[in-house]
Length: 334
Image (cartoon, rainbow, N blue to C red):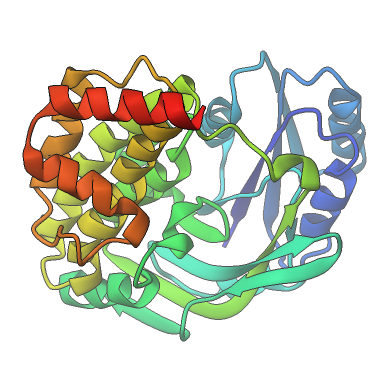
């Protein structure tokens, strides 16, 4: 079985050798590595070419900068493996992970990951057991096994998974290049709509290397709010489709409350409290309240204390009044 490992590369000169080496040293007989240089302006293009010249299993694509989704899509367009895997250019595969995961014949093979900061493991997440699932009923059980009580961290990332390439191509699955937040989740969830079987591997396959410069990010800007709104529009549609297909999954049913409302809608409302935003207008508030209105579990007792005021404002049912309140609070907290 051939596995294509797609690695988007953007200004990754300091980490690229180690990342590629973690794939080249895998004890897996048939691996194709696809390096997609996404318009890097450091030495990454030269490093990609140098690696390619010394390893016959490596392909290189050079393209104009278009973002990580564009780079992954470019890799998918030339992949030839039976399965594809995505690996970020500053992360690493654990030894033996490809042989382990490649030993299964499922539409999706999902292993675990660990977060590493300054050489120290800060978090480990793995499926609760190694198991195989096939058919609608068992796939409903798969979703219950991999979705947490308050999040779906094993499904949020497109990495540490094998995808059957024939399914990716049959359904034309690609990353949304306009979406820069939640694009991994949308690819995974859309793939799950097309998959009929899955295998979980109770092992860590992937090291997610956290760099201190990436710990701080702008999560209150208008551009971030725009991205969440775009994600919500797509996510609610895909989630509805998954819930219809896997009606037996209890955890999937709960995702609307814990993920759509308590994670994404409330994040936008929190942004409105912290900053004056062009998105804080009656039309957007009305949209957010429609999302909240679809949440049958929503109450002041089902949310964190900090979110209770948002629920109370929603219960008043007046987007225009809410806009005035959020604008007033943002001026005080600014």
